[in-house]
Image 1 (tube, one colour):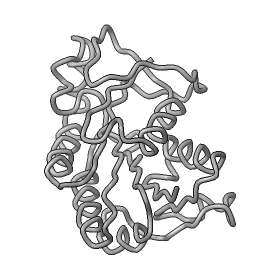
Image 2 (image 1 turned 180 degrees about the vertical axis):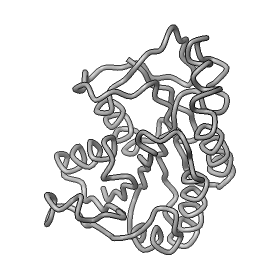
Image 3 (image 1 turned 30 degrees about the horizontal axis):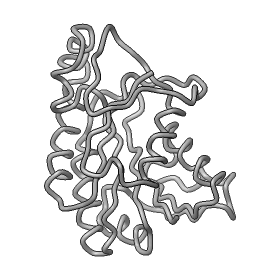
Image 4 (image 1 turned 45 degrees about the horizontal axis):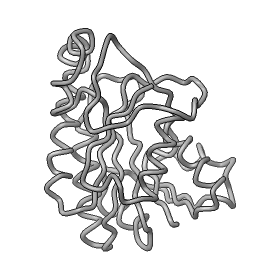
Length: 208
């Protein structure tokens, strides 16, 4: 399979890249800092560009089977419109290139998933993460109405722990406290979802 990965230089995206390479997929990465993937020279096609630019995304998307977005703001709690600009670029590029399959990484607590959050989670989502979650929610409204074969993935709090290889996934999951999941396990689900049809037009909540 030919995969375009957005956010490949981030911690979750890099896990997806590594999984895809181990499985024999052909990987293209769109990166503002191509040098961050220098260790993969000859194994990954790296396109220099910005995930918020329709032209850049279309250039990288041409000829792909699936787009996996693992875009994030790292430690920032300000969205700076990253997700709405990126979703607009991806939707526009998809119309141009004919690529319809999109697996999009979000965060638990965005949109309707907020209703299932624990009291502890709701405090954090409605205060500390309010700005970035609002931007994510708007981007996902656009994706849902885009006509693409989307999957929206909502992990709980991310950690850098090793992959466990097992996790809970469902359209709705009960929450207690502030549960976590490793980026490695999230990458595993993103990769598997991209290779199947089970999660097309569905939300996937994922946690340990």
